[in-house]
Image 1 (tube, rainbow, N blue to C red):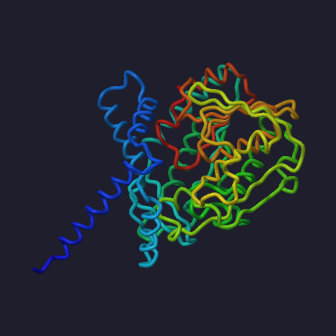
Image 2 (image 1 turned 90 degrees about the vertical axis):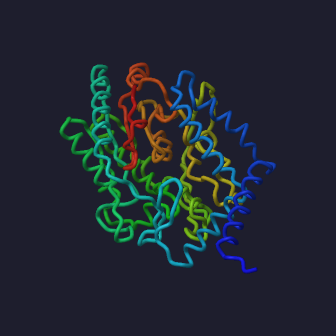
Image 3 (image 1 turned 30 degrees about the vertical axis):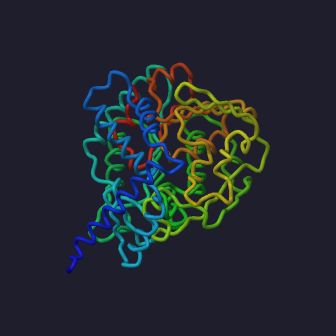
Length: 401
């Protein structure tokens, strides 16, 4: 009897799917059911409407299934290899819809037009600025660049990214409302560095070297317009140790396509080559951790420094990242207080900026659930900085209440 190839394909498909599900439930390092309930109790608050509960539950279940899929990395790697062999520059992705390989062989998603969200974000920031004005607290918005730019076509020719469009619309709105901002895009894209020097190939973030340069521009702005006296030595790379680990980093985009499609990045660690002394307070979900010592001892998260670690280790988080609230107390600098509201682009920046001031408080609105204006009035900073990249115009990131 002749067996149709469609039947064979269907059988193989179900064998793979059930094999993955069996591995998910039985693999010794996985506990998806318990992890689901733990995550659900943490993320879904009492009193949440039923429909929102169902939506959140589905999202949590999808994330856990994706993260704990048996042999996930191997499947991703094989899939990416096939895409590379056939020369594809557009790869289907469950989270982003599509991921692209640019003309510089970098991996990234594209951002759509967000006119409505930009307008809502402007309304929110204007309200926050008004409350800070009442308390006599200055405010500065800092615009970090997105990986793609309107200055050249990096994506496949039939694809368009609107990150710079959204940023330009937002900054125009800030101008009309008289709100101060620092646009880092022209300062960083001044022609002195290539795209590959500015951004990771396998991740959507800027390189640590780019974050360090951006911090120097922020220091200059604080000195010029906000009464700070940050010593120029803190922005001079000659005063730092620079160590580059070769082909050791598979970023967030590369982890979705597999290393055989994206390749690997070098990772550069920048640390002070001068005396430092810190007390760092880390707050998450009502718990507090305290770190004391030098920059290397208190600020760096050592688990991301292992040279023999897996390439998918998120080394970008070595500068202490993704917490509800961080309080940097610099024991060797006597003045300068900053509150920084940030996305993930701010992780290296707040660590470098803390070297030149006495106190820096960093908060992430995806985790921080207090009123920002109230928080600022209680802690009396010399300035509140809001720093976001060009893909952060959404309600969650501008919910200051």
